[in-house]
Image (cartoon, rainbow, N blue to C red):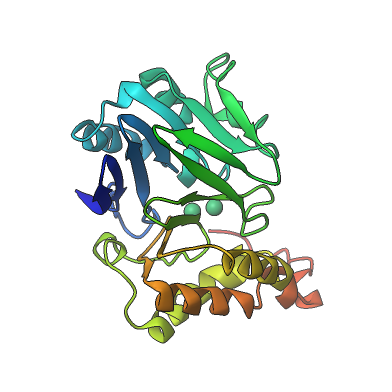
Length: 263
Ligand SMILES: [Fe+2]
Ligand SMILES: [Fe+2]
């Protein structure tokens, strides 16, 4: 089922939260997004093989998938864009991804599938024309991927933040918004401590984010942060976050004992 994040004057943002089958906790819940502006469409972080069929059917109700202009990938993780080959087959779209990952992306596809269809995003980010408007690819490197972008929509003032702000929740929770920030921060913390690279990247991102007009931060996993006050709380939380390299000690680099075999 789609959640409408924004719909006015020929511009629509839709979110899909429940396309991953939740079996035995083995698969992480993911959010996918469709932005349409005056008959042109961009799919953001469409996911892997298991979301492809359901997402195709889901967006087909709102927009003909064949006519997608872009697939936008925040980074190259399997839950972000492992389905890229199928989307390139199903549509005439181009795929936009960081220059860091552009030459790795074809490994998700059959040989030749990506020829002439990858648009490389430079480290500084770039504007992405869509219909009568423009999306922005905004740098979020090392949060968590080395070449990582968030996608900002100036019409809805939504920042699609990829894995930054992610929480491992159910699909039902993911369709909602965060109301108790402190309680939610406790849910987010384990993921961010392990998957984000370090406070230096957090601080630099926070300083940039404070210069933007953001109404809603919507991550790729879990619920979103809506309204200026909640957005500001999230940015402040990221600013002070200790994670990744900040937390490493020698204990994290010890040769395992031979008897500690994986089961
Ligand atoms: Fe990721
Ligand atoms: Fe993710």
